[in-house]
Image (cartoon, rainbow, N blue to C red; front, side, top):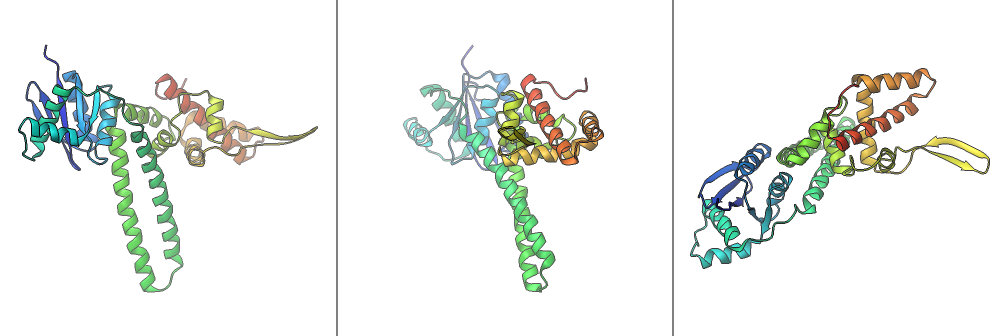
Length: 310
């Protein structure tokens, strides 16, 4: 059986794909649905190499999806592909021809496959951070809007809020494309979101801000989130246990999850009520729930098993 080589030409909104030596060609959209379709089709082909041309960042999400499916991937230099195109007499500039040239380049040159660049995970984390920043700006501007009396200033605030909301929609789309387009991240998100109290937004925050989740023991994970208790002590004097440090975004996400869980998660709801009945202050009990929630999420990713009540 002939070795299969796939070339993918990436643009802002679509991916053109060409397969050698069968000459099969197709296109998908560059979003979560399109990437899922792409990966499913590539997996059935069992390619020797999938080559994606670097196109100023548009290829990052595509590379993450392909590498996440454990397919051999090479992100190729566009200058090399152009020189190769000239050498074989392919000078026309249309997307389908480019995809065919990239596939031909992969077959002839056989660039070394490599793992998805770390920049994919970095981009994901930066997008999640940017989303949080935009939400904070929207909340701040809405507070200002309530206090302002001048009509002109209110209109200015309304325009800025509308612009920020539009940007938030764009960021949400990019994050959704990255997560749903990557089999690995999609599987992790689904596992985390199986826990009552953890929605899509919180799951993605944990994926971006706490990539160690599922890889460390529960004490280390709690420490990274700033939820590991410590006791102030000097000589014979012992103070109250406290939490401090850690990753603020993770700790905030854990608290948000805990607040929802004490109402909707039967296990954590019972745990919270037990602590309150034992005389624990509400904040202390909530911290304990947040810590237990993080322990549950860590175990779920470690064992690759969704939430279930024992």
